[in-house]
Length: 181
Image 1 (tube, one colour):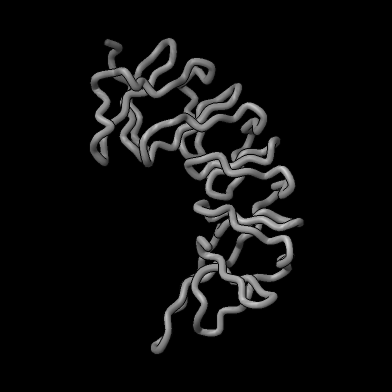
Image 2 (cartoon, rainbow, N blue to C red):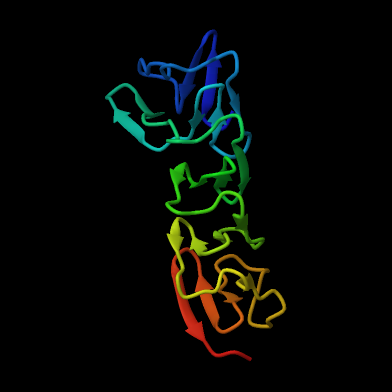
């Protein structure tokens, strides 16, 4: 499921070929994949393919998970939010990496179209794993009613705003301030 394979008492990450070894120190009995997310967990750890190694041989090629343990994640309280964000209630993670300073208790992913990776907590707005410091976290939102938004096509520019400013967001990284209407 989602890149993880169980064979007997072993868990593999990535493709299984070319003598790829199983992942080490997994609690196979409690291991479960958070389907559709690339995250998995067992009683001891939370996992995500933080590093993937690829080997090309003349007779075989394979990509497998190398570094997978999500640091400081509590597996008993860990849950996937959406848009590749997850929390254990205290910490917040984006694609398996800790978002420094993010507050897991107040963290919320902003509902938006595909490839719209924006979120807030009590102090900050986040774009992917970066703080968008120009925005006010308490009032930041996707301006769904703004006529400049076109949610019907892939690659659109989206209008985001807070109480003071309006921006045009072109995923994945470009944000520029524009005039309010």
